[in-house]
Image 1 (tube, one colour):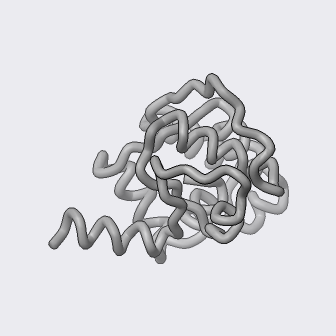
Image 2 (spheres, one colour):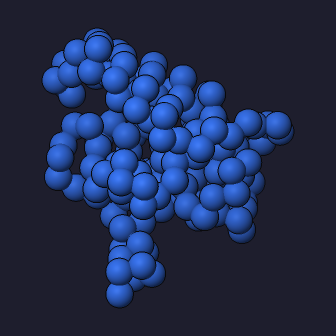
Length: 141
């Protein structure tokens, strides 16, 4: 799950991103997390503009980050896969998806992930809404 999905999950209790965060919290999904992805979460959520937009305090953000660290499956990245995407922040999530052997990389803007130089058959980049459709079809039907 990339940073934009977490951000949207915290910004609104409605929508697919928040539902995914609740599924992680309930143990229905596993969240793979590397140190660099965690640092990206912390940097973005701790920005003054993010705190204002999310209507959270720094303590609230720290609590969210601690909660995510507690729930996540820690993944160590052994091989860099750069250069791949134009946005360096996106590359770390490709590395995480590859290293964790996950099936889905959940990202708000999948267009960026589908245009990179490297292609992977081991995972698919999907939007939060696409992920929930896949989840419902596979596990709730």
